[in-house]
Image 1 (spheres, each protein chain N blue to C red):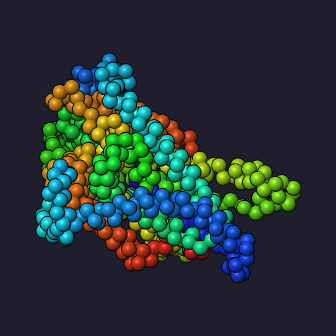
Image 2: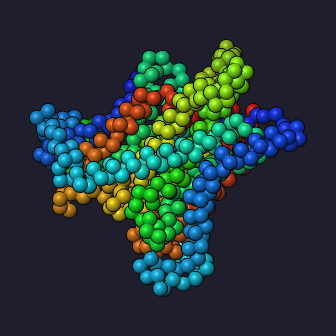
Image 3: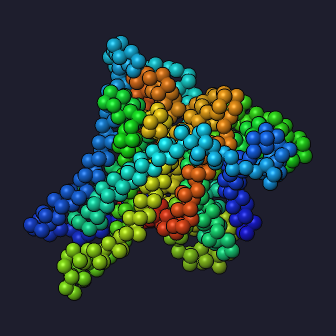
Length: 276
Length: 315
């Protein structure tokens, strides 16, 4: 068992180490396998450099990378906030209130999440070009809602279903006003779920590539798209050191979030998911 | 990647006639849930109807004057084009290979995570890491890893085969090896999600049943096929459905690694190419509609054929 686990851990880690290794290779080591150890895998200590990070953060490539990073953050954060707020009301209603059409809402959310993103891109590209939303942040945030909203609705509904809503009434019986009861009892119970949902939603938006490359050209381009279209100084030079450094930078915060909230993310992803 | 948690079960007592309070609750329910519902419809239903409409025209964005109604002409052009069937074939190939491999690895992983004592926490953490990596980044990692000039894989294979492997093997020079790399990167990236869904299914199996089978002398495989798998059928179906739909829409890896070279184009890539590169809005829309219909068909087959119940009511 231990050996199998070790194998899995290696398989998982190697591509990550590899992208990090590429990001710290000197220009010489990029071209010459003999300057690397473990079969061209990792640069020798003398060949390690952080020049690629300098290049994308403050150097020549920063004009491409830094705005893309800001675009990614703005677009993904706004899409997450909008989705989570709307989904919160929706999930609250589904978990707490009795009204017809709950199932329709959940089925719609599910159907939307199955939607092939590329099928949305074609008409959006056409319309956005006409009305001037092409290559704008808003022009990305709107389609991102089709990725983030269904996910947020489902995850939050699952979380909210587990909240013992009777406690709110109990607090009211004990003399709390309904607002106090809601704020003191329900909000603390719900906030971990809301927070987890926000993280998962943010990842989904952060991961998007199709919308980003199709609906932007340079002004609103996010990091994944910028990486794909990043070219070196000349067409003969592959800027893989710089791309890898950028990849590491966009990966680290997300991985840290996952590691910190591991347990809750797992429960969020699978919550109630598959009851037999 | 689309991840969908499940259906919260809605168990509420049937309402005894509509009191004012119940009416108020209904209204409030829709007031709260309505905005999210409307936004969801707007961001998907509107574009898809627009796509259906556009698909009936021969329409190139750079030449709007020549826009002309061709009815199903675009569809006829598409289904008679071998490139389309190549893309469909590749997409199906990737879907079947990755889902089958992921199901097997994901299941083994889930069982390991369920049972293993020693690196349990580490394992759970590590397994989650690929899930958090942007697909584009994982595609670049695999791309650079196998490339001749930058890569390490050829060097490792050469060492492992004691020199029999050619260090200058061009992974992106053949259909099969390109597909292998594409599939591997997809498997690496999405197996965690599969195994998490399977793990939650495993966790709900009553351990006593397995224990009883063990006492009665059932072998590992007997227990597996007679007790474990039948009891987590729902979990497996949901996991397979989600992953199938996800794999069928594959785009990022292929775009980064081959751009469709060596006949590796996929359904999504074809739609992208027509719309964005060639600005053939009509043709691109028609491919998009076909992709949408295929996804719908897959979902319908699963829900009907395998009786996957996705929306509660399972208690």
